Each structure stands twice: as structure tokens, then as C-alpha cells.
Image 1: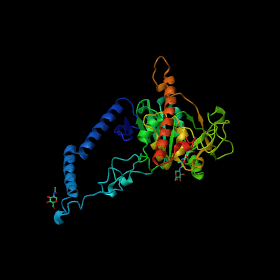
Image 2: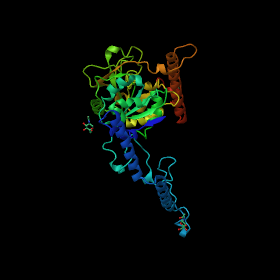
Image 3: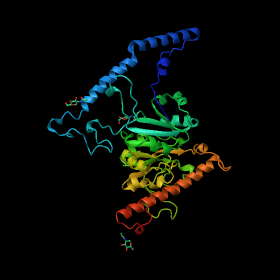
Image 4: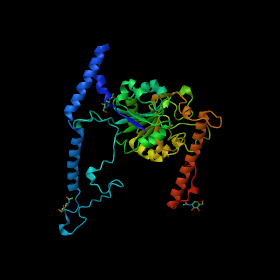
Length: 390
Ligand SMILES: *[C@@H]1O[C@H](CO)[C@@H](O)[C@H](O)[C@H]1NC(C)=O
Ligand SMILES: *[C@@H]1O[C@H](CO)[C@@H](O)[C@H](O)[C@H]1NC(C)=O
Ligand SMILES: *[C@@H]1O[C@H](CO)[C@@H](O)[C@H](O)[C@H]1NC(C)=O
């Protein structure tokens, strides 16, 4: 796993050479800049290791004074200064609450200056794409639909990260690389609710979406206006979406319910007729994501069945989950993940992936059903008395 940050030393040298003179002149300048840089560093930190050492010993002395809990022992009260704060996060009860930083963010900081002045702005929205380099042009087009109010986070499943720096925006994006993993694998590991806490909305998107008719700021306005906790953009209708619910409607801002084929929706307020979006391009509010993150299983990496269960994380689900028609996308169905499988028993890699998807769906359904049964049992309700509540 590798975090790629913008502040690589190499950038300093590169920007110093913007004029690009040619031949021996360039060589000369390169060497000069190198020497000057070395001198500069030498002047700034004449004896770096020693400075560090002195610094450390001063810090240690200060901390031992702060931490001396025996200072108050004059009146025989050993534990008067012992800190124990039950309302702190679990495991951090020994800390004074004022120092507890239980949440984080993806804001890139400087390595110098005053920390409080690091961030010119703090984006309120987060968009993640799970990408392979082959889809770079599509992702480039997609990223450009998200304003500077968005933190951009790319999950790389093919190990290629540095090549993305050809795109101007890549240097301010966060890059996380782990080979051959799925969107939900990354989401579970890198989008913990405490890590993404500063973001009002979180877009967790596939790489094969056409965004020509989509604008992220306008999308957010609609989501706020209609109170959608979980949403997705409508899908271009001519491409025959699998579900009626996610199909874009004409002359609508958003829609929250639909009709399906006869018999598909015993309850019109439940999936797939309402309270339903697909897993290719979901958008979560902070609160909804906190719930959904907890529902994602570590081993069920494809997320199949999750779409039917999202309704458990919004209340009332048929009002808080919906599809935004006015900002819509095209699902281009590039079988990228299928290519990440491996050939087994002479079958094509995508077949193995597909099989696993279906298997995971069954496992997820079974786990959810068992979890609900044991919960109802534990609170003394006979779960056999109600049905259809998947
Ligand atoms: C802690 O405080 C006690 C009482 O004031 C003192 O005797 C002791 O030397 C201190 N210990 C350290 C490590 O500073
Ligand atoms: C970014 O957010 C600010 C504050 O909500 C807003 O005023 C601004 O218009 C947004 N930027 C864009 C490009 O929409
Ligand atoms: C469940 O249904 C059975 C029979 O219909 C009934 O006897 C029982 O009281 C019900 N249990 C609860 C908890 O409602």
C-alpha cells in the first residue's frame, strides 16, 4: 500500500527548471541548482541528527513532568491525578478530553509554517473513484465535473499511480494503491466514518460512468433540497438499466419511487420500487455513510446485495433515498473488474468473478437475515411473525 503525496522533493528541482534551456547549458544549470540546494540544506540544518537529539531530550523532560502522577501524594491520595474519562472514545479513557482527536480528514498539509495556516480551504465533499490506468481519460472527464469543493481520492487497483500525474488535478488528489481489490474493499478500509467525518457528502463511484450531463455542485443542491441521505444520479434510459428505479425520468428533479414488473415489489416502499439505489454511483450523507460503513462486510468485497440493504440506514427510507434525474449519468459497463480475476478450471477470469459476486450476495442475505433473527430473539420478539423484511 502506498500513499502518494504531492510534496515530493523532486518537484522543487522540476519547477526551478521551467525554462528548459537545452544541451550543456541545461546540464550546467541542473548541477548549479543541485549544489545550491545542497548548500541551502546545509545552512538550514548544519547538524540535523544532533538537533533532533537535543530536541527529543527536551521533549522527554517536559513530558515526564506533565506525567508525574506522584506529585500530589502529599495528602496520601495516590490516584487524584489519574485521568479516566468514560465519555472518551473506547480505549482512550486515560487521556484528557482536550487532547483527543477522534476524527481526521484527507486535507493535504504543508511541511512548514504554522499549522493553522496550512489549509486555504477545507472541501466539504469527497469523491472517490476506483480506477485502473486504462480508464484514465474517462476519470479525467469525471473529475472535471467536481469543483474545488471536493476532495478527490483515487483507489488504484492496478498499481499504477505515478502516471496519473500527467493530469494537473492528480497532484492535489489522494492516491491509494492496493492491487486487484474492489471499490467496497477500499471503502471499508480507507473511508472509516471517523476519517471522512468533515465531509457532508461522499461519492463512492465506479470508473466507467459517463458524466457529460452531470454537475456535482448542482447535484448536491438537489440532494439537499429534497433531503436525500442516499442517492445516485439517474441512468440514461436508452441503455436499458436493470432496475426501473434508477432510470432517469424526464421533467423531474428527483424521484423516490417507481413501479416494477408485476410481483417484484410486494411492498411499494421497499426495494426495488423505492428506498433503492444501485452500487455503481452511490452518494451518501455523512450520517448515512456512518451506518452503511458498519454494514459492509470485510470479506464480501463485491458489495452485491448491499443496494437492497441500504434502506436500513435511512429513516424513513422511502423518503430519504432517491434518484436525481436532473443530473444524470451514463453507465458504460466496462468489464474492468472482471479482468482482475484469475483463470480457474479453464474458465475465463470474469466467470470466476461473476460466480463470486452471486455467492457473496447469498452470503450477505443469509448474514443479514440471521443477524436480524438473533436481534429480535434477544429482545423477545418472535421473528417468524413478520416476513418480507429483507
Ligand atoms: C515526581 O514528583 C515527586 C514529588 O514532587 C518528586 O519527588 C519526583 O522526583 C518527581 N519525579 C519525576 C520523575 O520528576
Ligand atoms: C464551493 O462552495 C462554496 C460555498 O458553499 C460556494 O459558494 C461555491 O460556489 C462553490 N464552488 C463552486 C464551483 O460551485
Ligand atoms: C407470534 O405469532 C404467534 C402465532 O401467530 C403468537 O402466538 C405469538 O404471540 C406472536 N408473538 C409475538 C411476539 O407477537
